Image (spheres, rainbow, N blue to C red):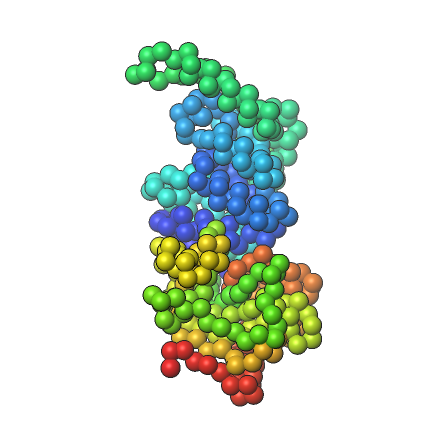
Length: 400
């Protein structure tokens, strides 16, 4: 459990939030622009089962002034996002599944996440307050959907684009900005008063901030998945370290929109190849362990690196490896994730410790993920099993 004050690097946190999405992402933002929308569209396109609900404003003047983007809304809608409009909206809230939330001043725009001075709180696994934020979202959405003037559809977006273009054609004086009547907006009107049952509970945020131990207890141990499920690695093959000319110690790679912004210098990663284990289960199998330099902004494949390995065009983000040890045996003989989850259960992941999450849900948690944080206890158990396999098969340590 943690709460983090975010006063810089909002863009990195946005990438982390999107990367962490497994089932649902919910956004409230008055303004939405193309670059940030495209990041989300890529996630939704790659993972069509993710449910995305967005509440925003729909004001003609704001589209004309390019404070918000009709094209962004069109692309989001095309990728399955459900869009709703509210008048006088000012909230900025980002909810990922049931365990991550960010609330603060940042709109879902390049300015909000990349250029402006913004301040937000990023919460992870703070069950009580995140539950309250979901309740806030649910109550707003319930008020919205019962009003006819709330859904943002393709037809509405198209008609709004026509109206703005028509106004531009009639705009003669190029030095004077065109303006629209305030009535040229779309969206539900919701109550801004609190009923008794809407009164906030005692200040959970203050309790979290005071409890420093909860803030600093974040694990620095990760599973890193190598490969993709649609193209499973040969279980009989041996692992091969990818080491471009510029990074002889090796690197491990990630999709462009799943940059490993949470992995820090000195963090421990366990390399799990997407293959079959020795029992024939389709599952990740840990074949190596490494320490890393962490992710740095700018860790994106160069043209020269892509020439060396064309697949890096699909997986251009990377972290550099400090030291790696991998087993000298067929990949199927590594440590199966099925075995780990059967043995460790909910103690495998920080987000599941102390819960009663059933095995099928635990096993599904890594789907469509490039990397996942695991507990220090899980890392210790993996090390004990890896040591046994290292004695049996031998290892290659790089650099020597």
